[in-house]
Amino acid sequence: QLQLVESGGALVQPGGSLRLSCADSGFALNAYSVGWFRQAPGKEPEGVSCISSSGGTTNYGDSVKGRFTISRDNVKNTVYLQVSSLKPEDTGLYFCAADWPPYTAFCSIVYDKGRHFIRGQGTQVTVSS
Image (tube, rainbow, N blue to C red):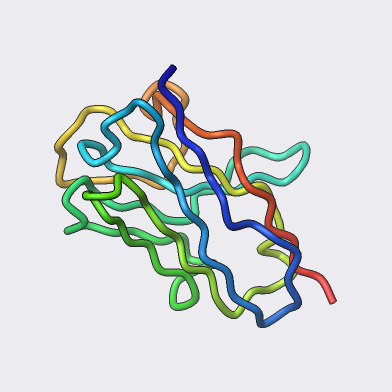
């Protein structure tokens, strides 16, 4: 079964840091652009960051620029999101999604169920003192 698996979420204090991981299972993640999104209960997903299949293009949401860094290891088929200087408003379920088609130089932080054809279950990040 094709799926993505996120890990690394935790309860952290404001100002803290985490590294989130998105790995594939039975899927060539290294061929696709990948986006990270976060979702609060009852709200639509918010785009956090994305990275193209080669890693040459990255984008960030305005609220996380300068604090979050996306990267990927295409040998390990894993995409990372380093989140730093965390704020309470960063709290949410963080999930990754692969973006169709493969091998593009672009990526999108606008979540689209049709375009983001595979996503994971998410990992919870809670920022609280």
